[in-house]
Length: 85
Image (cartoon, rainbow, N blue to C red):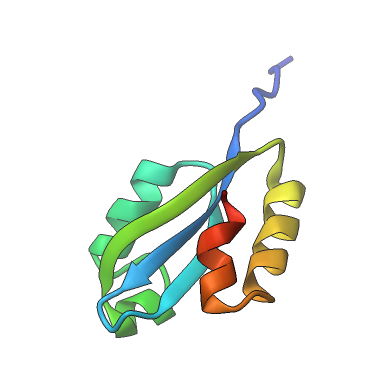
């Protein structure tokens, strides 16, 4: 029987080349940022261009990360930057 290893999930905010923000979730932050920088991470970031990772936070599971992502997407630009403290 294969034991399922608990992975840490992350919610993150990155800045695009046009100054806009993108919020997403991943279980491998380095791999995801590489994908974004190569233009294959998401349609939005591919279109806008990847500039830099601004913030990320570990979550206990994917469900929690998705809930955090939803909360962040409801915030203003200024509130998004302050969300991570």
